[in-house]
Every structure is written in C-alpha cells, then in structure tokens.
Image 1 (spheres, rainbow, N blue to C red):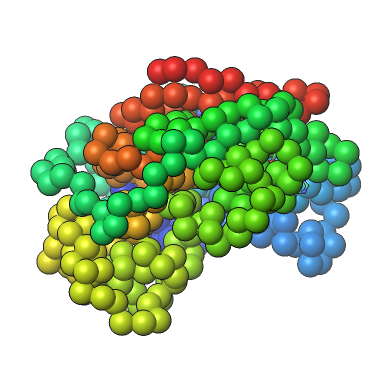
Image 2 (tube, rainbow, N blue to C red):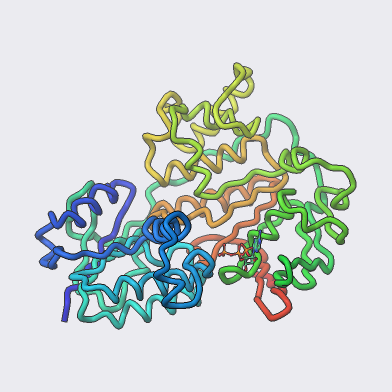
Amino acid sequence: MGRHWAIFTTNESNKKGFLKLLVQGKIDELEIDLSRPALYSRAQILKAIQEEEIHDDPTYLKAYGQSLGSMSSGERKKRFLEQLLSQNISCLILDNPFDHLDLEGQQALRQQLETLEKTPTICLLSRRSDALSITTNTALLENTSLIEAPEEREPQFVWTSPLPKPIHSPAPFKSLFAFKNVNVAYEDKPVLQDISWEVKQGEFWQLKGPNGSGKSTILSMVSGDNPKGYGQELYLFGHKKGSGESVWELKKHIGYFTPSLLDSFKGYHTLENMIVSGLTDSIGLYTRPKDTQIRKAKEWLSFLGLADKAERYFHELSLGYKHLIMIARAMTKHPPLLILDEPTAGLDDESCRLFTSMVNKISAESDTTIVFVSHRNEPGLAPKKIYELTPGPSGATGKTTLV
Ligand SMILES: Nc1ncnc2c1ncn2[C@@H]1O[C@H](COP(=O)(O)OP(=O)(O)OP(=O)(O)O)[C@@H](O)[C@H]1O
C-alpha cells in the first residue's frame, strides 16, 4: 500500500514554495517517489482549459466527447483526475481538491481518491475535515518545512469592541429584493424555475445549492449585472427591475466579497486606504480621503486588532486577515445588503472560524442583511434562514428553511 500524506496548511505556510520543491522532487522526508509527480490543482485545471482553447488540445474532446472547459465543475475535476491517473505517474499531489465543489461533487471526488490505495498521494489541505480516509501520515506545513501537526486550536481572537457605527445612516429598505415566480433560461437551457424569494432588512441568509444550480445567476440579478430580470416580477431596493435604476445605483446598496476579488488588489495599498476605498468602491484612492473617512477606517482597523498596522501593505497580510479586511472594506459604507460569495474558500480552519464569527457579529450588531453563499455547512456560522436551490429538468426550484 502506498503512503498517503495529509499536509495541513495555515496562514504561515508557503504552499507555493513547497509545491515547487515537491514537483522538483526535493522533499525526501515524505518517502515517496517524486520522479514523475502529477499535480492536481485548480490552476492546473485552468491551464488544461487554456491548452484546449489556445492550442486546440483535443484530449478531453476525444476521450469524453466534450471539452474540459464546457464541463460542470464537478465533472471537470473528475475527468481531469482520470486523465492524470491514466499517465505513468509516481505520485499524485493534490492542492485543496474539495474547494468550490458542492457536497455531492465532494463525495464523488472523495470516493474516486480513496480508491487510489496504490498511487501515493500528497494532499495539501487548509481544512482538516477534508483529509482522506486512506491517510497514513499527517504533517503541518510551516513556511516550506514539515512539522508534526499539533492538536487543532480554538481561535485565539475574541471580539472585544462593538462593530463600528456607520458614518451616515444606511438607506432603510424593508424589502431588499424580491423574486416573484421568476424564470431564467440561457438559450434553451432552463436554469431557474418559478423562483419566489424575498429578503428583508436585517435578515441573515445562507444561499445553498449544488454547482450549476443558479446561485451566481440569482446574485448577478440582484446586483444588476444580469439583464435576465427585465420584464419579470423582480424588485430591487424598492423598485421593480427595469423601472429606471442604474447598475451604479444598485451597487451603492450592496457590499460584496468573493475571494477572486483579491486578485484586483495586488499592488501597494495600505490597510487604511483599502478600507477607505470601500466607501467609493474603487480599487485604490484617487482623491484625498476626508478626515471622517480616515477616522472610520481606523475604527475598523482597531476593531480587527490591526490599529498599529494602518500603514502596512495589504499584500503583506496573511490570507485570513486579507479576508477580514475585505469584509471591513465592504462594510465601511454600511450597505443595506452584504453579499458574501463562497468567502471562506482557501482559508484554514482557524481563519474560517474567525471569519464566520465576524459575519455573525455583523448580523447581530447592524441592520445590514447578509446573504452568505456556501456549499459547506460552515462551522460556527449562524444564519437564521436558508434558501436552497434544487436543480430539475425545468430549472432549479428554491425552498426556504428556518434554522
Ligand atoms: N452567461 C451564460 N450563458 C450560458 N449559460 C450560463 C451563463 N451563466 C450561467 N450559465 C449556466 O447556468 C447554470 C447556473 O450557473 P450558475 O453559475 O448561476 O450556478 P452556481 O450555482 O452559481 O454554480 P457554482 O456553485 O458552480 O458556482 C449553469 O448550468 C451555467 O452553465
């Protein structure tokens, strides 16, 4: 039987550096043959899709009658793994294989991986609960070194201050958005069927549903980025869709965070400027901020325990703190609606708990309505209502559950 490593990563891990050493065959202590490694990661899947698009690579079209790019996320992961395993590999390196997959997709991939007893695996995981049942060895990655994985720690940070108050009172909306029997199809493919969902001021929702069930489609209709709502019973911030409100007007009412937003902030932005720029939804600052705005940003930094780090650069922060700054940035204008789209992807267990506890606190101490999109049951997250999409042949239908 081969060795199967579960290597847990935290904010202090240099995963990129470690992966590089692994594929170069420079990590002896794993006692695994690294001469022909295969890397299974989101980046590698995107690379394979690019190969198809740019260089007309026919591998997937020939094998499955469909290109990798046209497959659903679950199918893509399954087929990509099959292709890796069909090659003469000496071991399989997996980087957070379960991220962005719905529960069904996670189970299917888990089954596929757990039958790999003979092919040694090295699984880099930010969540301990993702470890495979075939795991024979565990370690923690500190920088690029492996150390013994200690017992799981409870989060050290306790919120000592109340949530900062808004500069101006946010616009009061009793109903933030309402879908009434809304249907959506792309060309002739039905995606949403008879969706009726109303979200009111101060509520805390989790939006759930398998990959491809239409969660992003719903969110893009709420943020005004998707024209599918025209001519339907869709009400956004007090107006019927199509009655004259601009996308810009809608966005003023919404704070939004999804991890891919981090890609826009790779330059030199201080923590203070990051938060101030949330007031204007801009990337970077183009005018001198007002004193009240700077004071508010400092209040948020102090709330996060970062009061002495206002001039530090955002890109120097750990991933966990980057996510916290991004919600502070989204919250600084105290939007009536805060949308968090799979916001914990890539976070380790401890950062995740810290993140969900901050979201709970926002819900408890402000009028902001929260819609939290996640495939996982996030430990510690305390939504009051769940809207769940279930796909069907005529599009996904939705159901509300009180928690
Ligand atoms: N612009 C588009 N053109 C054609 N089809 C689309 C478009 N946008 C979404 N779809 C299809 O609509 C369906 C719903 O997609 P959507 O992205 O809303 O699902 P999701 O629940 O957010 O999925 P995931 O959890 O994987 O992010 C999918 O089958 C998708 O392929």
